[in-house]
Length: 397
Image 1 (tube, one colour):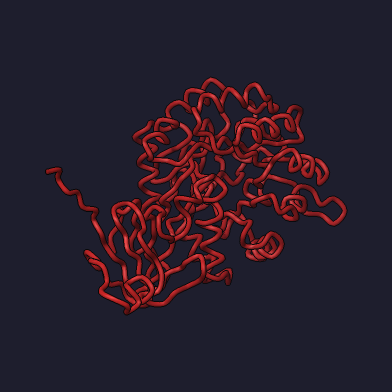
Image 2 (cartoon, helix red, strand yellow):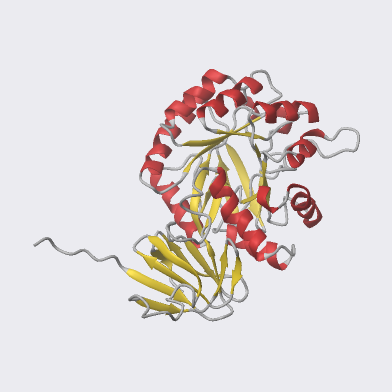
């Protein structure tokens, strides 16, 4: 007789739960193995009184003032925990991934910075292996196809115009794991590169750009669907020269990235973005570098030196902001306590929208039956009390 296999079942009960339909007090989430079996009000997922409830397994009773939300999804991240995603070894990348997981990010896309093409091709091979192992969710190429006058923390000597052949070379090197390219579409070859990415099913993101409003509209019509850290590294919004910001905010095909760390954006600008784009088109990102979750000091960001003081990262030469030290739990807390966003809008921006954008909305981003058991437990002060990824506790409440 064949052995009978059993799936481990566990239940989280008692806390508020943020579901696609809204916030439920005293909710109940049942997990079977790596997946969510049910999520909703306690009576709705435990038989509703119409018969005996199924064997619940281990029940974890959470305080009523705690909150359970979907695992965070970060689609723009360069490092953390003292480790670099842009140049570190595979082991160092995993160190950074673990750091962000402890802060609630259960799905993470690794971002590069501008380097030589040969370096990026080699880097693609190593990172693609981590995607294939399930450690990270994909690769985002930020540079080298960006505008020198909006370079930010990128080495100007390595910048180049977008070349569809080189874009294709990196996509091929990533072996199906490339998720997104940030480029300046106004440069020669930019529109053709956007069209190619759209054909290949890879996100074309407009960023580090000096494009006009009209040039940005052309890029969106060619297939660009993301604004890389909107407002940062692009011309400011002006009443006679609206530039890329107005074009990216107004078009329903575009998702806008926002870095909600209190340094990159004024709260009024964050409110403007949400009011214009709507909560369904915003993705919170960290744009984190090595110091995230680690501390002040001197770090490398690709070939450049970065000084981190009081949590703010700037280039050692020139003083430009060089990514952030943000983790998404901090972005969540800022959103609901300082920015006045609702819990449902915050969850959309930090989990649901980015998951959908990178093609993983059927697996992560919401607490629904059949999806991966990726979730974050927050205490009454919105601090992380527990993190679960694929049914296993990273940090147990």
